[in-house]
Image (tube, rainbow over all chains, first blue to last red; front, side):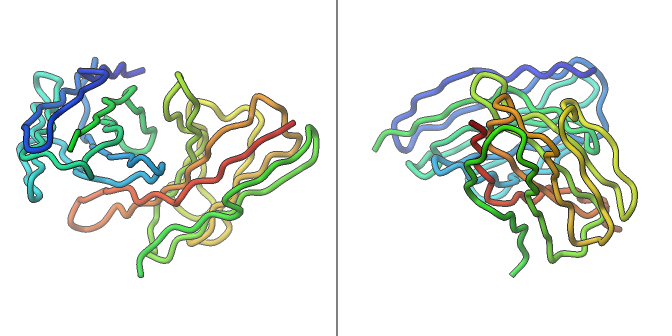
Length: 106
Length: 115
């Protein structure tokens, strides 16, 4: 099956800083999602992005399916951005990466 | 309000005592799925359903059963729970949609402890 690798595994930012999270996958996929799990455990879908670029406020994502990676950009980070960010290629049989744990310091 | 609900939110039970975790969505979604989350192992898919009466195994289906008799409900059944099924469980749903957007919406999670 598809292997998913996320980097970095951990990230500490000062509030206001920008960051880029990366998701590499081992095989061609025709869909990919990014999720955020907040410190209380709630999972929220950020982007469904099989290819191209999408933006939602301070967050944006880019997937280059032909090169088997996706990037999640967080600009002007806030403490509420803390948590774990997961990417998940595929759709019906969903495979999650191990996640990037982000802590934003005030 | 569009939502996925799970019940119970917390459950402590004993080995071998059958239990059911319910999942319900009010968005008329075709697709529903169950995941478990464990420290060091991340999120793994247990079962998923493409529509009523259509279910399939995910990565870790052993020890679990599901059914999809109605579109809105997708219960997870543990016939004989064991301590290795102690975990945080999430239900999710999504629409296949005419617009081609498949965002998964997650329930709040069920923390299960089997002693």
